[in-house]
Each structure stands twice: as C-alpha cells, then as structure tokens.
Length: 203
Image (cartoon, rainbow, N blue to C red; front, side):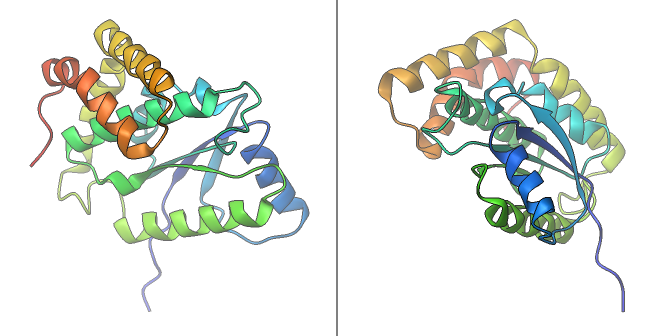
C-alpha cells in the first residue's frame, strides 16, 4: 500500500486563543497530525498578507491561520482585520492559479482543544489530498514558488496596502463580517492594484 502524502503545513496562531487551544490539546493528550509547524502571533490581526505567500514560496504545501472567535478578540477587532488579509491572500492565490483550499483561516478559543484538533486534522487530510504544491494545480512547482515569492513582495506594495486599508475601513463601517462580503470588498478595492502587479485571475 502506498503511504499518503505528508504535507508541510505552516500555521500562524493567535497567542491568546488558538495557540493556547493547541497547547491544551497537547496537555490533554489529544492526537492530531504532526504536520503543522507553528508561528505564534499576539493576534491574528497582525498577520501580514505577505506571510502566507512567502510561506508557500519557501516550501509549505498549505497555510493555516488560527485566531479567536469573531467578537472575542483580545484586541477588540483584530480577527475581523485578519479576515480582510485572508481575503487578499485568497484573491492572490486565485490569480496565480493555486487551489484556494491550501489556505485556511479558522477559530478556536483557548478552551477548545478538541475543536482545534478537528480543524487541523481535517485541514491536514485536505492538504494531503491536494498533494505537493503544484500537483493539483497542474503547474510546475518551481515556477509556482517563483511566482509566489514575487506575489509576496507585491503584497507589500503601497497601492495594495492602501487598498487593503480602505477595504478594512469599509468593512468596519458596514459591520458586515461575512466572508463573502469581505471577499467582495477586497476584490473591489484591490483589483486594480493586483491586476497591475500580478495580472488577472487564472481561468
């Protein structure tokens, strides 16, 4: 029997909730795949859009971002802003022809160790099914990582940053935090800058 692919997953976890959930899962001896390599952040809102793109460019097969449940952020609204950042990452991946299932943002409170285990187990299985970066996309992985490195640099561009700030402000003003609405805002605000720097979405 051929062993399933073991994906390399990079995780950015909020210190107060998701990281603590991961720690409590370990203390409680819950079993989950060892594929996740964790970077602890004080808040998911501190996630820079270049981080997931750079992670994929440097060898990860998938990226996970974990934070507090919406409305429970220790810094009031950091996880809402993380959703805006995540929408930009998904928008960028679409333009590069990369499967959107390689990037996930989800929530687990400090007391939800078992929930964290379920999220990571499911995401690891999903990443394993997709295989190495480039396989499910049908794109040469070396070329794809080169494009990702360029996209990571592009995410730091002033035009993109200003557009992202505008999307965040409009999100907070409208108080509609659904992922579909946020994705639409990011697309509308960042489309021109991303098209200039990266190109149109892949067919």
